[in-house]
Length: 151
Length: 129
Image (cartoon, rainbow over all chains, first blue to last red):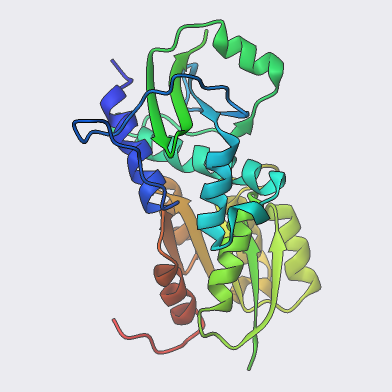
């Protein structure tokens, strides 16, 4: 199987902590918490890596705001929507790229450009079942990434 | 001598981060120009004197490889040092950029200190290893 859930989770944690200095909430056993009782994504992005395979990202606006603020060395309340969207696309690019390196060591696949999704595109993904799904929760703010194979 | 630097990335937040890194790098900085793709970068490079280009590879309209090809073909712009910024693992594309004449490359995620050292070296500053 091409997809690998534990690899995707590791990549999420690596990029979020090393690039954006955002650290995961931990559960009672000290493992990263991957569940939120309620989650409504504010923005969604996707990136393709050939053969109809995509990573679909669901972002919490507050998390993006903190990521952008850490990245730019400023306060979250100074972050504009355009900066949140830019950081969502950049993080999609870096997470997608890192994941692809690990699941495709032969480098037979290539990465597309990251895209911000509109409602119709989001519904296309929501109508399908993801092959794998990983979450990253920090201060009750979520990012969920699902891998889809679309014909 | 103040150096003019051109930052090429389709993500505005990456251009901001690069700009901040350049500003704190210790380089005697002139102007920092920005471009969102290779076409804009070529226009900026033809319009202004540029001493160093820092470019992403994966961009719409004209990506980093095509930009380097165009710069290196140009008699005047061909000598500008180019630092490539790429996501990890895109070795074949990075190698292609180096073959075409890019000075060096940086992989994302990166630490600002790493970029700073590459910028200083590309501009001829002495950087301790």
